[in-house]
Image (cartoon, rainbow over all chains, first blue to last red):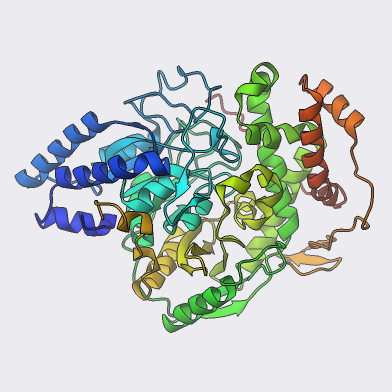
Length: 468
Length: 90
C-alpha cells in the first residue's frame, strides 16, 4: 500500500487511479495488522464505511459533484458523537446512553456531508484528560515510532491512527494540547483553530471555556482541507463564534514573503529538554527564512500565569462536570483522572475568577505582541515523549508541553513535525497566529512542508508490517 | 520565556504585573497544605477518599500551589474576567 496524504488520495480518486473502496480496504488492513499492538480504535464501523465507500465510488464514476472529502477514511475521537455507535469517552463512568438523541455531532455531520468515510471511534485518554490506566478495560495507545512510548494524549488514537495510515485524517479535541501533543509525539500535523471557530456541540466536555475540536492529519494541507469542512458557526454551540470563514486551502500559496515570525525557544519553561530541539528549531528558522519570512526573537508574555490559568480553569470546569460521579464512582475513574480533576478541590471560586481575569490581561498582552509579528513559533514540547511505564508520575510533567498557554488566550495553533531526536522520536514545532487567522498559520505550515519531508516519514512499525 | 519586571504596557494600558517571575517560594519552604487541610477540602467537596488517595491528592495539590499563589498575588485592577453571561434564552 502507498502511504497517502488526504491531498494525494483525493487526487488519485479524481484521476481514477484508485477507488474509495481500495483506500478503505488499505486503511482497514493497517488497522487489522496493528490495532491490537497500538491501541488505535475503540470501535469500528466497517460495514457502514464500506457502504459509504461504494457510494463514493458511484459518485466518482458517474461524474457527479464530489464533496471535498469524498472517499477519504476518517476517524473520530471517542468523545465526539456519531450516529453509528455509542460514545464511551474511554470511561466506565460515562452513561452509554449519553449520545442517544444526538446522533452525529455537528463536526461528524460536516465530515460525512463532505463525503468522508467515518471508519470508527478512536482511542482517547479518559474524558480527554490524563494518561492510560492499564487496570481499566481499554486499549493503551502506543507510539508507532517506538511502541515502548506513549502516543501523547488525549487524542491518542487519532495520533497513531493517522501516523500509520489506519485513517488518513481524524478529529481530535484540545483543551490544553490534546490535538497538538499526540500530533507532535506521533509525527503528524494538527491544528487547534481559534476558540469558537469549530462547533463543539455533540462532544463530551472537559473544560467548557477551553475545549476545541480540530483536524489531525499528516500535513498542514490536509488539515486545511479538513478545516474547510469543519469551520463555521453553529447555534447549537454556545461558544461558537459567528465570524466569516476563509478558504484555507486557497490560502496555501507557499510564499512567506513579508511574513514576520517571532521565535520563543521557551528554553526556561521546563527543566527537562531534549538536546535535539534547538538544532531542529535552527533548521526551521533557516527554512522559513528561505521561504521569505523574517524571524525575530520574542518573549511570550505572562507565560507562567497563562499556563497556570489554563490548568486552574480546566480542572475547575472539569470538576464541576464530574463532581457527582467522582463522589459516587471514584474508583471507576482512571487513576490519572482522579488525581488530575480531584486537585480542583484546592481551587476556590475566587481562584477560578482570577484565572479568567488573567486570561483577559493575557489576551491583551498577546495582542500587543502580535502587533509586531504575524506569527509566533515555539517548540510544541520540551520532550519527544515518555515511556508508557513512566506515566504514573505524569501530573508533574505537564509543564513540558507548551500548548496550554494558547488555550488560555484562544489563538489558532498548528503543529508540524520538524525532525527526530537521537532515538528516532519525532520533534515538533508549533505555529501560532492571530485570532481567526488560521490562513496564515496553515500557509506557514504548508510552505515549510513544501521544503521539508518530515511529515512524510513512515514509522518503523509500518515497515515491519506487511501493509507497508 | 517571558521577561521579568514589575510593569508592563499592553495596547496603551498599563498593568503592574510581575511577568513570570522566578518561583518566589524560598527553597525548603514547608508545603502549603497538609493532610488535615486536604481532608477538610475533600469534605467540603463531598468526596470521601481513603488515606492513600488523600496523600496522592495532597502531593499533587502542593506541586501546583505555587502557580495558584502566583495568580492570587497579581493585582489586576479593574480587569473583568474573560467570561460573559449570554442573556439569550437559547
